[in-house]
Length: 466
Image (cartoon, rainbow, N blue to C red; front, side, top):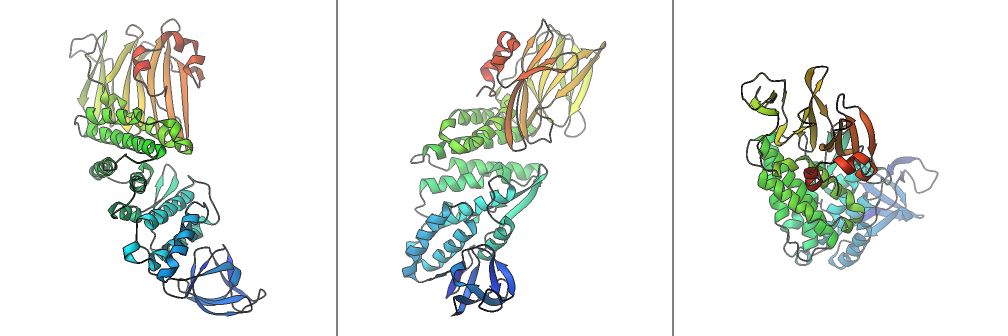
């Protein structure tokens, strides 16, 4: 909610403007004011304005050039809107723009009110939150700006994610855009995208709450008409739908429900994205690729197991799946090795390699994190080694089997991972006996074994080669 503004006001337009006890530069300073602060005017003297700061409950004098007096009559609305439009596209002026937006909402008559000011204020609030989270360049004292927007009822949520503090705008005015009659399609799409961000989902939500949230995200995105959207927004919408469908596929699989249709929808939406249309927002496409890639096995049909090795899945502790590797196709034989997991085991991914010397299996412990289990014989005993997408704390990523070079007994794998806010893609050759790295490259064409021994099914279905 935007707080109602009183009459005879001025907005501070400079950061760290001094509020002084007297109208002169040598007078003692009471506090520092920040752009966007709203002050009540009570007089003027010698180039200074006598003001009262209701938020800090303190009066004093401020240099006149640090303030802009605003009118709140209906006749002032066009001028306030013009300033709002300018500040909306000025990174670093978010709190000032929100102040002008609040003033415009006070001045404009209800008959002339559109979704534009709600959209503009919400966009600036989201950008300020991104600055606080470190996902956008910082401008000025972000902490002071976050405190400043609270006077207008702009609320933020914060929580820890992957070792850093995530700050998100609560989205109230984006929801207002969606319910405002006559809102433009672009405004509605922008609101839907802001309200469905994966990085602004509370990581402490339980499984049932998260499933309900994702169903709501899906319905919100599906309700946006693509006609009339810019090419960039249309591709952003498809990428976001893909990420939401991938989340739904994971949740359905975790509830032991069919996830095939959700995973297929995720792949279809990802295919509809035109990455070149995204410009500086290409990271949204990479995010979609990694998230969809993590759960892409949900779209694969189950296939009968062939060869000398056979996997069986049984229930372990509550929520666990235990995988046993057996030699031969006769059930009931003593397992060569057994391992349990709380993740989703994609049995369709099981593939014997090296004439039965090993077997690989995709296991997804988290919504956007998929590992590769390698069952292989070492020192006359079978073991299971886990190859993770990356070495850092799980953020986003997947690793998958890409082929096997029998002459050198090398496992070919592909990884795509987000670490430290950046996406990386690698193709590697691992020694099968101990999974030691032999060589790696940013492109499979650089590695000779990928050219000769890559798996044809991987080449056909992988998202790593986007």
